[in-house]
Image (cartoon, rainbow, N blue to C red; front, side, top):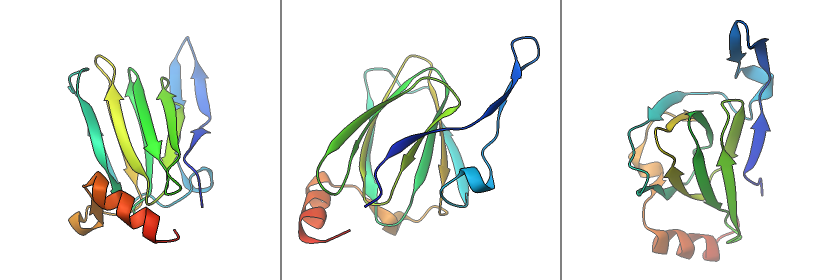
Length: 136
């Protein structure tokens, strides 16, 4: 089973001119089919609360901080702090996620599939039943 983990993408530039981070081809675990961003989330709200049957994601804090809790199918919970645009969290398929946004945070998601509602597992109870009864 592939575990969620942080990728460090290279950044180019300097303080004088600014920095650029590139996410492309060989430095990514999948081809990007969709991108979206989430912002203006109150810092007292937890987002996410779902898993995906097939979708893989790369999560980036473009601005501010994100605290990501990811539960893998073996029921181990991992916590990651995304606090720089070059830190990217890879979330494999069949992982439950919860996201706490810091004040003013902007989340960018790069996804392996276009949106498909049928790929979502929105009930934690259903997720637990699935992972306890299958080998992922």
